[in-house]
Structures are given as structure tokens and as C-alpha cells.
Amino acid sequence: MKIGTDVSLATCWEEGYLIMDFKVRELFPNGRKNALDKDAVVRFYASDGRALGDWCIIKILDTCWDFVSLIEVYERHKEGVDLMCGFDEENPRTGLDDPNEYDMLNLASDLHAYCGLDQ
Image 1 (cartoon, rainbow, N blue to C red):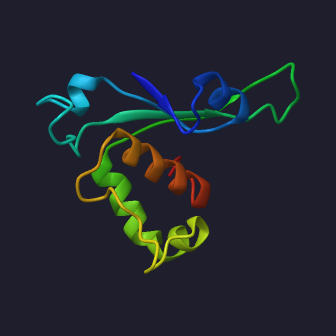
Image 2: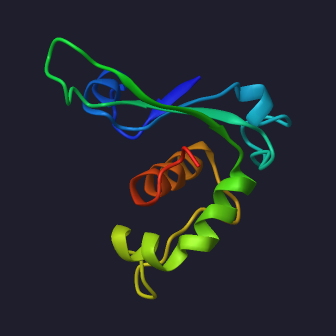
């Protein structure tokens, strides 16, 4: 299954937004109504957002991560990521304790914007 940070996957690809590609049964081994497997590895990719013009779109990111590893990177950069994304005590980040696939995608997208996921 593929999901993106925009409603349309085509728009995500054309504009360089992050896309998450995963197998539902691996990410949710006990069914979608149950918890996400935080150790399940999923693929993230993005294009250059037509930076080279309409005639060429290049894949600039293609990497695999699990939620546990994303959290480790987030914890190292928490202050900067939260500041960049507008999270604070009055507007805290949610979805880290019991995440769904969109929480995972949004966290990955924020990390990619802040420090890159190609580490």
C-alpha cells in the first residue's frame, strides 16, 4: 500500500512530497484495528519535485525505516524538529505512543525535512 503526505499520490510524486510504501500485513500483523508493529520496516521515497523542469523527475530519496529508528532520530533532533514544525507545549506532537501509518509517515516527513532520512 502506498500513502503520501498529500491526498493524491501523483501530486506527492510530482511535487516531491514523501511517499510511504508498505505491506499492510507486515505493518499491522494483528490487523489494522490493532497496533502498528513498530519494528516493521517500510519504504519511503520522494522525487526532486520537478526541480529540473517539467521534462524530468528524478527520485532523490529511496530508503527503508522502522518506527523505532525514526523515534531514535526524532529524539536526537526533537527540539529543532518541533520548532520547525510548530509543535510546543500548547500544541504537542501526537501519535508517537500508539501510531498509525499516517503518524509514521508524518514523522518521517518532518525528519526528512529537518535532517534527511538518507543517514
